[in-house]
Amino acid sequence: MSGRYTEHDHEHYERPRRHTRPRTKERPSYEDAVDGVVVTVDRGRYTLLVDDATVMAMKARPLGRKGVVVGDRVRAVGDTSGADGSLARIVEVAERRTVLRRTADDDDPVERVIVSNADQLVVVTALADPEPRPRLIDRALVAAYDAGMQPLLCLTKSDLADPETLLSTYRSLGVPWVVTRKGGDLDALRERLHGRTSVLLGHSGVGKSTLVNALVPAADRQVGVVNAVTGRGRHTSTSAFMLALPDGAGWIVDTPGIRSFGLAHVRPGQLIGAFPDLDELTGECSRGCTHGAGEPECGLDLAVASGAADPDRVESFRRLLAARSEPAY
Figure 1 (cartoon, rainbow, N blue to C red):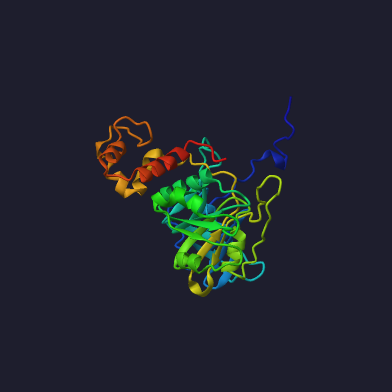
Figure 2: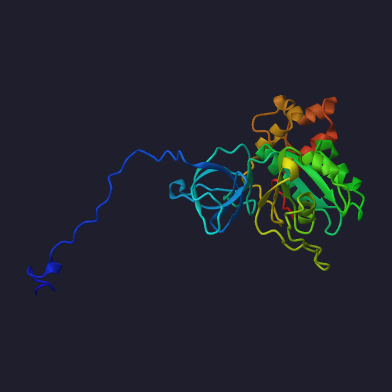
């Protein structure tokens, strides 16, 4: 049985092969690239601040699966004018100084980078309406210590409840704190934010967006309300957004309200390094000691028994350590 075409038909002949350029080890130098910082990410599009211009960009293909997040210092090529309809390409991501991560759940192996290159994690919690969630605060503190960031407690709605009840839980940890109320003075908070890049983190309804609007009046972040039945807030921020404080006083990053904070990426043995005074007391620990409650011959217990360590501080540290395996709800 003969084929469809004969040797006299032009379809019979082999089609020309696709011509490709030979591979080369040379890479573009991107000498014309400009420096920028990522201020928000939305569905594969990145908003950069380049000098005083706001530039839309996409990630260049050579970056592959390398993630680009809010706070990244990047280099971009293409149309970096910031004009309507312009689009640049991110071609390089600078090494990150700090990385704030979380996982969806404690058994989720996938780490999610929230923000990079931040100095301070501001854990925002309301003293009432909604009620404080200490376990979530503990987890946020663990994430801050793991990232090498300075934590700061910001207690809002102090006109509704006494802050001392919550502060007594964290005072032994030495975590700095500020207390605010609606329409109140924010000078203490501004002083803590000055000259830093700070990430505001908290569950919905605690007043993050209200704080952002007060600190950066031009931000115009949407403010939500707390459900009277569930006692939980409504998400008003849908993505992290980096904003410059007035007069070059620093940066703040507003993040979406969180329901939980997974810590699968944090190894319990790493946490002790954030407490140098306690770390130096663990020299007598047996091999493999996690420094948690119930560990046999833990150096922390020996230090407490001899009076060399503050028992409240050791207990607070162990509470943070336990937060790694306890639910945040």
